[in-house]
Image (cartoon, rainbow, N blue to C red; front, side, top):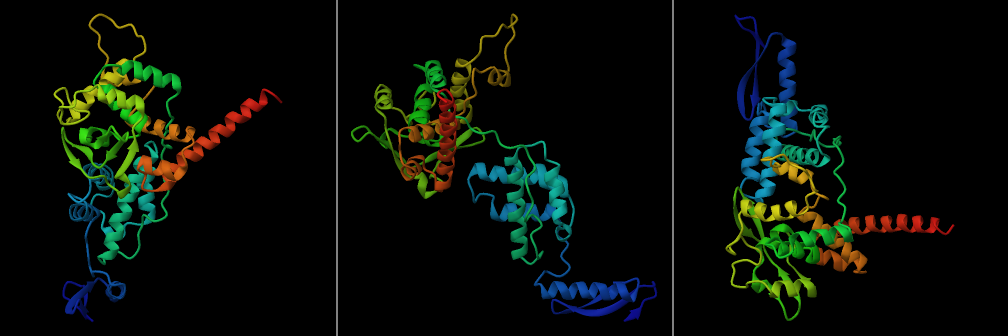
Length: 362
């Protein structure tokens, strides 16, 4: 070890097959740096790497997610990185991130939903796992971190009264077919909007679900279902069959825009506005006053989304006595636990209701 004219100490050490000078303001500092290099070499790490969280997050997204997953999934990762992860960690070196730093990020989102926190954590875990595989870090600082966000509101199926009100609101409108396909066939929004007339077998009373529509900005594209379970045949109830037979079949899609073409995001919103406006509570407005879109949603008799309609259909399968495995296939759930969770919740609800009825006789 030599002492330089500037007062620093220097010792030569082989790093990645090349001799390099290691500097320090004391012999102890030089030896500590060499020990760190030896540790990194033993662990198979890239010695001396200074990659920041910002740099790694951007590189990881571009090489593993961008253009390689569905648009909605890609947007979820992009949002987690650009809106939450990078603003929090900024130029922090990747190697300096510890579990407490990740927990601090999650704690700062305690007023947000648990689902958003889950999205951030999933993104971080995948980022760090890839960093481990590339020799940048040795452990995943996102492992074991818990959500602290608000629980996601439980999805509640529509009641018989609410279903009647909804059907009355969309009767003889462009939204009627969409609502009925979600409510009585359990199709997802994208599956309904991608549906073609050739997918419907009026003789066997079935619908073939084999594609889905996703929005990219205001435009849309047709894609295959995300999972094998998404490809399925679902029963076509008689009431929906009668409704479909009464429609114009010379259209590009079963549910399209006003011209029967594939819908854009704006076109779908306009169609769904029929539902929102049809379920408004009576309200007195001043002359010239108009409700904003948010005010209209807040003023609905009850809240409803396409997913709530699908959830309601799953409860209908339960009430009809459809077994769990068959319900999973009809719903297109890749994991039976998703279907089982809904069925179990309904079992518990029925037990509670039974207890209330028993109280009337005991």
